[in-house]
Length: 403
Image (cartoon, rainbow, N blue to C red; front, side, top):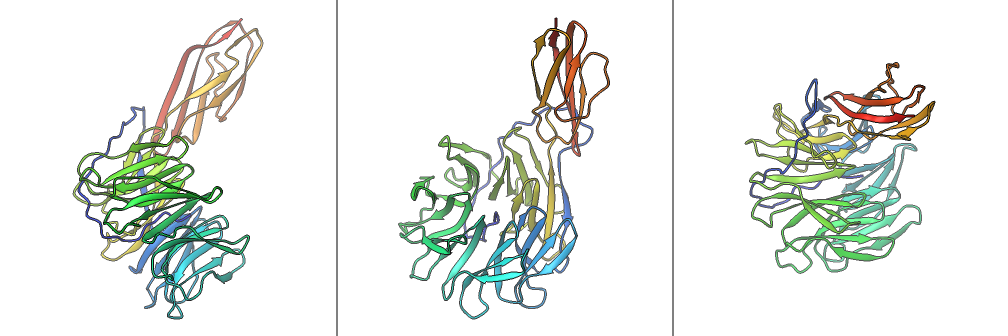
């Protein structure tokens, strides 16, 4: 799923983040570990899915599509020339193509090594893909509209008809984009449900740009308050949430799972910021970085972006590590001995577990252990969770009562 956005001409004032840092007992710190993927200084427009990163690259004088497998550390050249703005989902890569002096959308399947031309003789731009559905913006009728192609049915659908719709993103059956259909200088975010054929206007500020979507959540940047801020809208609750507030340039937001990531210059330079919607933690790059738009792609806890920290644009990857927050439940919490209790981990951002059941038994390192209490008593239970960023403990006094 594509999460990077095209470079745009928007003047943003500054914004700072409303975030509530969680106090935890840690042995390290939350971070974004940074890895350089390319070293030719000719890369642009990255996207990431699972262990694969794709981007456009002009190292040989022409813009071609490349892919890199993080698990095998192998780079593959996908196309030869005049290809731009790739997006990836699963084994399928789509891009904008100008090889025959005509713009079109193409697709390549990594599992079959087969290339497919999706459109012909059209002025297309900014493709995105999710599952069997490809979306893009298209100007072949003299005005920019959003189109969708279903690979399973080989059917093309025109999503918008009112012109000046740009940069679509898709997740499931929902397509989002930013739109200036009235050509009045006001830009807003719209969403379209492919299953119901219903369009919804998400914003009315007239200053909303560059949306991304995951599940029921849409994020975008908005300067309705005179500053560039990151906002989120939940389609299921119809609730809008302002993520950032104080002066700094916040731009290019992307979302995956509970992570929102964007670029921010609150420290006098552009850094990559990440925010956890559940724990309200934030992390950001702190080393020498110079990200540039179109910049950011996100999958799970992995970020890909273009960085000019070494003088020229290369692809970098960052791995987000938030501090873990321990939480658990148990069932039953009271009963006659001997009592078997199922413990369930409800922690966030955890990788390793250590359970203390309070009865002087051996510690358990299982995620969701079952423990047997043989004696009458009240037992205090604790769970310690750890990851690369640190550790945290949750403790419940006299939690298990055995009669």
